Amino acid sequence: MRLLTVCFDTAEVAQAGGFAAALGCEFDAVVVSGHPVADGLAEALRPLTEGYTHIAAVSSMKSKDLMARLAGLLDAAMVTDVVAVTSPSVFQRPMVAGSILATVETLCSPVVATFRPAGFKGSAGAGKTTELVAAAGRATLVSETVRGGSRPDLSQAKVVVSGGRPLGDAETFERVIGGLADKLGGAAGATRAAVDSGIAPNELQVGQTGKIVAPDLYIAAGISGSTQHMAGIKDSKLIVAINKDPDAPIFESADLGLVADLFEAIPELQSKL
Amino acid sequence: MKILVPVKRVVDPYAKVKPLPDGSGLDVAGVKFDVNPFDEIAVEEAVRMKERDPSVSVTVVSIGSGDCEEQLRKALAIGADEALLVETTDEMDSTVVAAELEAVVRQVGPDLVLMGKQATDDDCNQAGQMLAARLGWPQATFACKIETAQGSVRVTRETDNGEETLDVPLPAVVTTDLRLNEPRYIALPGIIKARSKPLSRQPRATTAAPKTRTIRLEPPPSRPPGRRVGSVDELVAALRERGAL
Ligand SMILES: Cc1cc2nc3c(=O)[nH]c(=O)nc-3n(C[C@H](O)[C@H](O)[C@H](O)COP(=O)(O)OP(=O)(O)OC[C@H]3O[C@@H](n4cnc5c(N)ncnc54)[C@H](O)[C@@H]3O)c2cc1C
Image 1 (cartoon, each protein chain N blue to C red):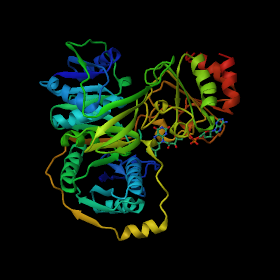
Image 2: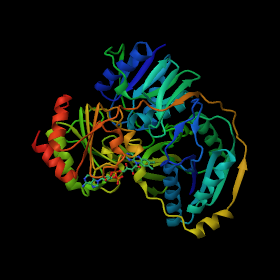
Image 3: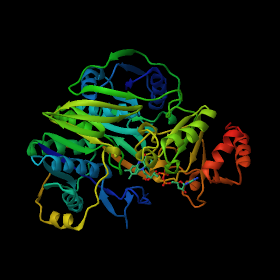
Image 4: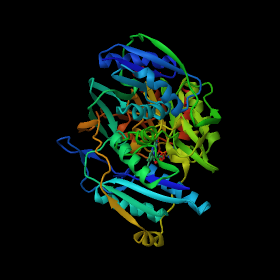
């Protein structure tokens, strides 16, 4: 058994150590740099996967774009969003917006997987590390908008403050949600409703089809608590909900709930920290 | 231009679903089924392309039981021209779906396959990329904007930290994200018209066997019940108590 991990930065190499430990094997890493376009990158990776029983990457939009294509090229079995490893061929993963935990067996080799790092601890380093500069594909990059700024990366942040539809507009979201996030040294997140209505940029969407977060503290303000949103925050250590509706479903999953108008509660909270 | 849109029948994404007590499957008693929301966005986008350019034709395909006719009719009601049902009750994973779709592509001959980025039941996010790999076609996943050009499409896609725009030569596979469009409300005339549009049934074309097997489904671990706090001061105290600040 031998694991190859496809990493997009060195932090992911460290996270791969946790996944290797759960599989019970050593691992090598390919670190991709440059701008990857899936078709070219998958072709370039293909020869490097020879001899490996498992090829894995940290779950992200980038890795999902790439790894499923690689699995198609290799005619491999694939498991998306692994949260636990039972054996080298049995994995657990959430489905139906996190309302079901599935145990999945792979029936052939190689196995391609993406995994959520929150469930895996371990500090083993990579055996061999290969640098791969992303090759050109037939799809070509025309332009790119990269946002980020000074806040920590949402999927890695220790504190996440998220806002929903009632934030109303981008300026208010940034002032209220962004302001508290900055005070706590955390990242800002949003619901699909907030992103769809232009209140927050798309990369801040947390949930089933957005980012999966696992902070020590998650503050949800003006968020109803849909299954799709909750799917992205279940690994948070402490969930705080601020909602003016005492019957909002988010209170069923929150560790601490405050029934209040967020436009009063958040500034007050910020001033008392 | 010919567009093929695969459509999956899934449990209503807004329904609360549970595993069967023995863990062998989903408890779907009394639960409605619908078109996977991402596939509906794909159908909508294809139909809009057709409305802009009448030379575009839209074929929808579903792989599954005879019940999938319901979802194909909905796609026809949105405005697709014709539907194909690959009828099977076999267990399938994304690798089987991709193999079957490859056969359908060879049969129908589309320039563009437009499909959902993931199904809201299995949440796999695999089939489109696997299909593109099998066909050796370029791909653009997570599309939030598609513009057609001569022999190519220009796709803006959502990324982990923003957006990027790709020029993708045709034929290609493009998968849709939530913000590509808002699917139309289907009015009665569309539903009636859909009844008489062509829908053909055929058996599977491949013998591809699944490469994964679901052993067990269970509810996710539940969180211990939380508590309400009465004021911001109480919240701050509770956060301090738990070492969260
Ligand atoms: C295929 C699919 C995928 C999806 N993926 C995602 C996803 O990844 N992430 C996601 O988040 N959603 C996703 N959704 C959408 C999801 O179903 C919900 O529609 C969405 O999460 C609701 O967002 P919200 O909580 O901001 O808005 P709402 O549901 O409208 O809730 C707003 C809440 O704010 C409260 N409120 C209003 N004003 C105030 C105030 N002044 N102070 C305090 N509270 C206030 C209200 O009581 C209410 O509870 C998806 C849906 C589908 C169909």
